[in-house]
Image 1: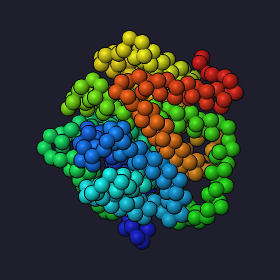
Image 2: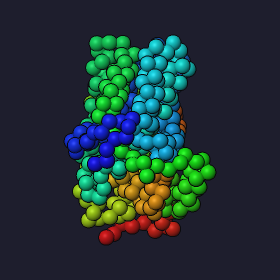
Image 3: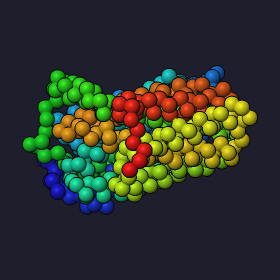
Image 4: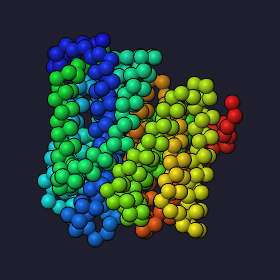
Amino acid sequence: MPEGTASAPSRHLSTPELVAMVAALSAMNALAIDIMLPALPQIGAAFQLTNDNDRQLVVVCYVALFGISQLVYGPLADAFGRRSVLIYALGIYVAGSMLCVIAPNFELFLAARALQGVGAAATRVISTAVVRDLTEGRRMAQVMSMAMTLFMVVPIIAPGIGQLLLFVAPWRWIFGALLIYALIILVWMLWRLPETLRPENRTPFRPGAIANAYRAVLSDRQTLGYTIATTFVTACLFGYIVSSEQIYVDVYGLGPLFPFAFGAIALSISFGTFLNSRIVVQHGMRRISHTMTLWFTACAGLIALVSATVGISFWPFVALLALCFSVFGLISSNFNALAMEPMGRIAGSASALFGAITATGGSLLGGLIARAFDGTVGPFALGLFLAGLATLCAVLWTERGRLTLKA
């Protein structure tokens, strides 16, 4: 493996430690979104918000900045190295977490959440770059798959952790827990992470070259089309995350049991992600993602129809929603691969732009879905259905009117 530079003493990462690092960095983002969902009512009360939907901004501000900041981290990491950029970014996340703990008003609190998003954006870009630096081929796929297997547990248990903290401490301790986690990760990276970018592979940080690379990404029909499609799919996920607490607590009255319902849907998403890794080689990315997009849209349409006509009780809602989101991994993973397929030598810039557009656009559109909450699941279900239709339209445009549904 590559050895560290003068600024990072020579270290070797074993496969288990590399997997653990990637999973831990990925978990930082998932925790920042999911662990505080049970605390949204307390946050709204603490800041005396008159509109309950305003507390959704706690998630939206974070994710929007998480997305757009990726545009900068990719070129920075290619120019100045993975380790140093990650360390600085973790410092930004720590600062944001500290400000979340002490913020005296809602505006400053939202700014702190945005700062957390800016810092966390580096974890996605740089963890992937580190794996690419240290591994290749089948071993790279193996490391990423093992890390994803560990990471999939986090969205399932994060709201439960947040609820447990609320049982014993005020809501700000949730952000104190995020601060402690970030400090542990920062110390770990300082101690064990080498600089994995070889000096001969560094590229100068030139805005003109970066803009040309991004222009090339946006000019490719397949990459652009599947980026747009992924943005609409991501909007469905973020719309669910942002409005989940209001749906489960305000509509269905689950109270402290909310994390169990949230975890059930997260489990269905994890199942789909795992299933995709088992069948994609046999059935192909297009066949799976196109078929599952039709499935997703049909399930979302059924939820919208039932909720608008006869109403929908808790168990049918959760069952249909699980069926809907069980195919999320089968869609998003393959859309991602299809978007990156034509990019070749500018895969790094393409990945950064893809992540920025899908996360930022998805969070904003998902925020609109959640913002329409009116005390029922109707607007949420309708938003899922419309986003599913938009995804289907984007795929049809990309594939010039053809869907691949058969082998």
